[in-house]
Image (tube, rainbow, N blue to C red; front, top):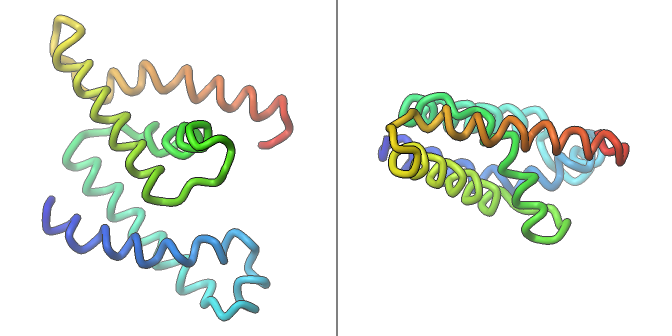
Length: 136
């Protein structure tokens, strides 16, 4: 796991610069000199590899990927957070879920059970409020 992180985290941080350009749209990003297809493919491969290693190490805690960015957005007051703050928020959510699963429930449970039980209602609430505001 350490070897994978030593390779993938720097790759993710280097490739995250292209995210701002890609958010502007393909034509604008290409006009700014960004290789759109190559950047998109590299980001996708790094993200899939990070998710694969995380799932192999911690088990299926998939909802964290859906809620880490919205939680970070609410914490920083509506500004678009970068990759690193969202990643740290996701790590904190998993860490807290693991602590609750191992120590506070009286019985040891997999972290995916706790994060799913807490995350599913939050994700539903987040989708419902975004849908009402017309942001979906």
